[in-house]
Image (cartoon, rainbow, N blue to C red):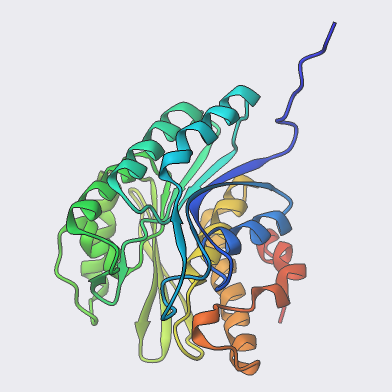
Length: 288
């Protein structure tokens, strides 16, 4: 008599995002980060890119026609996820597939982190239509943690984007987004006088600001590294504010090293240089 096989003896996070072969973003960034934090990363690709869209030329394949059958195989295996992290979604159909995924796999013990990847610097990404951005807001109600940048927070709340937005208005945006469903928000990477501010908000609580000095040009993948560390740290039971602070410090160190190595802006950040220290960040240890 065959004994049932249990595939759930190790903590797992499902990462639903695109995959880029070059450029250090999306799944290619989240997978090593989550793995280094001693959690199994299970990628579900939404698109396959040779390199990300910030390059002048790239090759891509839409994975939408394959996503449902891919997920069906996970269901057959009886997989359970301690965390689910969603990122770039290219169509309303993909958002609907992800909603079904969340309904099926979410349990009381599953942490859902939604990174509503839609745009930056006040503009939607070229591949994003306003109707798709509106549909993205429907995922917010499933999130335990939402990690928008300032542009995405403005889109979600229907506000006009302003580069110099005051703390009071950012607080109100966080409060409104929490009313959509998430318990915790972090509005990431707000540039102010040479620094990057991350605004941490928990429903019913005060807003806290985490500040790191900005080094070099803005780069692809920083948001993916940021959300991956937060998702993994939360699955490991770490304090939310501490997870955000450590993610911010890890990225700041990686950005400094990337600048020293003179890596082109398109190529992302050299987080590999510090993967061996990432659990110090997750566990709250200090590394100078």
